Length: 214
Image (spheres, rainbow, N blue to C red):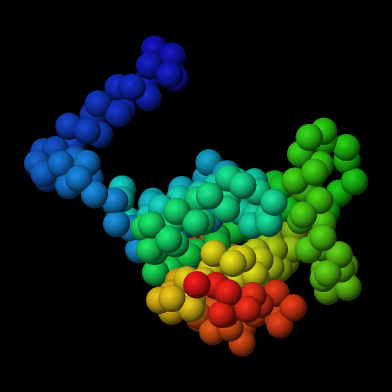
């Protein structure tokens, strides 16, 4: 049996198991999607949102990319963000990085990696901001992990710079934004930052005129 066929068999077994434990499970999922959380995480296969948080399908709306980035020109991310905030009306957004992130590690180096160079440049900009603190750390792995933390914090800041978040803050005082980091070595999450819906938390130059936000 090849790995692809194994996935299909495992899907069938999972479906049967879910129906056996709760016959109405899929009927409920089919009728509605009302998650309270948007998860912006890394594409790393070892960091699955539902398993980490012990939640069922339907509870978390998920977007993943390399190194859990919030890039202001990324229409994919912005489309997910707008849908989650304006249609699903999520109450919380979690940006979750993880220690030992390969994307962050690559951004600390100078290798020419092709197309991904353009993506990693965004992480390099974070490194540039915190260069003195990171360079003062002993050991490459520790430097990577510190940049992972700084990167999560800065992506949370980039979220609240968007008009999508600011408009929602004005209209319904939500969502709250959280920065998490996940430990591959123990499966535990640590909270790095929490940002409440308060325009004072946004650097003035990035605040949109509230009268124009609708």
